[in-house]
Image 1 (cartoon, helix red, strand yellow):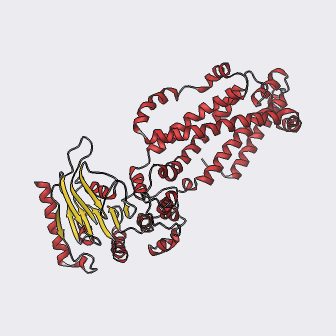
Image 2: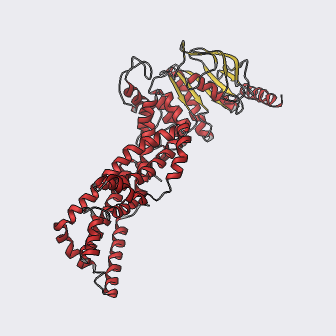
Image 3: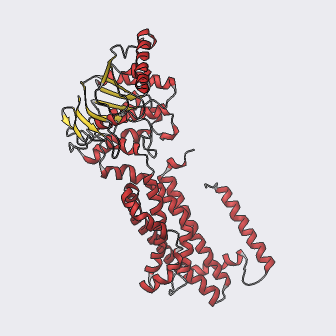
Length: 256
Length: 248
């Protein structure tokens, strides 16, 4: 689904973040990208989203080299992702409206797009149908993220990219949205890449964990985590052991 | 600042009362009572006041429309392009604080006696207000918001339609609300020169030439109503177009 082939990336007048970096994600996999701030997690996600481009190498998603955001990839960010002047329903519709605006041109929207603005089933699935006519500032952070998820899923993505989507939420809300994300991933057969700086969240969500360190990142460090997604995993010793291991990795990185 | 209708009513009553008392105390022709003015108002409306009012209203509406149509896209472009903004913002910085009313004689010299110089002067005032507020609004949109809308498939055209345009609406309306008062004041000044149409001319003619003070006050009331009307229209538009701004 995702191939990064020997990419180099740096921001203008900054040291490189990725150098000859390669990484691959198969269809239907669930990845967590973990690392301290400034390690390039968000940059990696934006490269896969087609919002940033490498100076060398190639990013391929769904078999095609990216030149712009791909209609079947969905991106959910931490905050500020919703239009403050639009209701929950209108926000959830935004992607569909954009497709209607451009028509099925194969660039901004897929060539097989069938117009329609009905988002109620998705609002209901995400438990926010009763908030449909509210504005973002009238609802809680968790409800805002549910709206952002609904907006992305209406476009029937096959790849879901999430940039610290739950980091500003309180613990119970975060946990319920993590579970919801896993449910939706399985239900829609999504490939999921979620960026987080929280070790626990990476271990809960990622069947594979990509660990990034201080830049430049050259070789991907991948930690398999097959038990993620199991509801009892949160309370198990294996879970705690992996968290300890990752913490040691990240602290070792800091000392080195 | 949002007012309850009842409070506005009582405030209006208090102002009229104060006017009435002042008229009694001063007891000169220069300050007729509100009743005397109300009595001549219908007569004056039939004798030209209505035409003068319409001319002034047209000048304000035309210049406002022109300012919105030209300043909003310019503000959006500057707010989106740091490079263009770097070129133009020093110019705006220099021109913005100039009291535009001093340009009235210049505009009359250049553009003559018709409606054009009056429309232009108000246009210039509103243009800068709208330009600056829309530019700042467009520049302050979080980059994350733009990126997330781009990730949904939006290109430049759709960003304008779905993000920049709706984001700039409140800025346009705020600019209008802040400057309609100034616009009407400057219109008055502009209508004192080289014209025989408009409320400014009417007020000056009745007061300083004909010494018909009640008629002059009828003109002042008409000009105040013009200001109120514009202000309330902007408020109404804000409620209609930007309901999300009013949430607490």
